[in-house]
Image 1 (cartoon, rainbow, N blue to C red):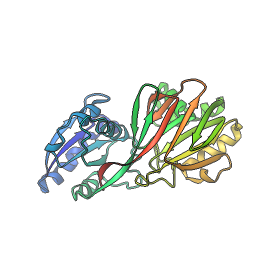
Image 2: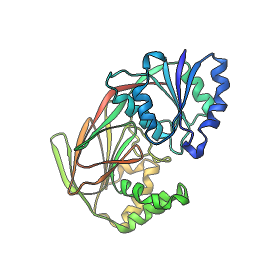
Image 3: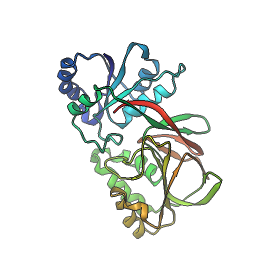
Image 4: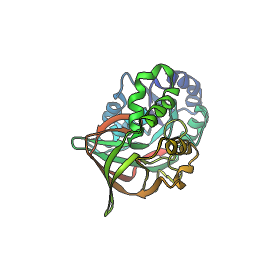
Length: 294
């Protein structure tokens, strides 16, 4: 067996290469041939997976976080030859939403991967005015995007910057008006945020979509009402970490195959934790889009 092994050396406090050194004995013991490729810049994994000679490998294994996985999937989904390759994911980033519920160490994860059992998972397609994006995890708009954007100035605080900026955004209590279209229904209203999930978890342990299944052919769409008081927001947002928000009267939970979002102005999006693309958007799920090693 031969695999392409892609490592993001800068993910998760630059521990990618340390993880590789820890799993190398497992690869050698099981006589797995591999070609090692290190990403050198943001977006590099997109071009690697997009131009990879897939026929030369039995699979692709990555060491990195959600960002690396997002790039690899984006590269594969945009291939001109439409060829696919099974992907094995070894968590190595600060956020690993796709594998959050597994919580395995790298060696244990690799041992599962090299059994080479495969399954199909869904991918989210996001169409904007000028671009087509792919997502494995989430597409978010509203407060969630604002937190991601404004937290950059507090990077020196580490991951606690998200908590701080969330509090700041709640205090601002910004009004966001949009039109959400789901099937033949249209909701023209104010919203705190709207997020479409493919996985149960987002970010660092936020249990955003308890009903999500990456293989069910559905998007889990969480919609939080707008014009809520600061007190209500402070009460509602902590529920996101427990999954109890889905029974909150200010939250609606949909499972859909597609939806559209139109805003009064062009607003930035959060796609798999990256700030990219702008509204308006048409979003749909692509069932069984890629294969992963289970």
